[in-house]
Image 1 (spheres, rainbow, N blue to C red):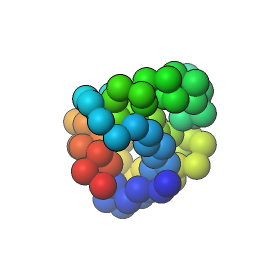
Image 2: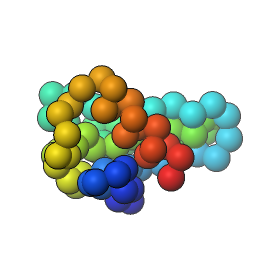
Image 3: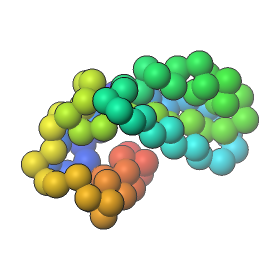
Length: 81
């Protein structure tokens, strides 16, 4: 599902309905598909979210620099949606 995070959209995959929320972060240009098996298994005891970083996979490119503050802000918006 594409989620608007203020100016662009990020692809987000969510699984599970109970327990703590776990966010899976991909690196090295990988997409959320990388976490498919882990996400499925962990969703039995947690709400598990994976996403494609801006400009990767199905996510749109962000107009803002990729700083820690911008990433945290976008992730916060994304998780509230």
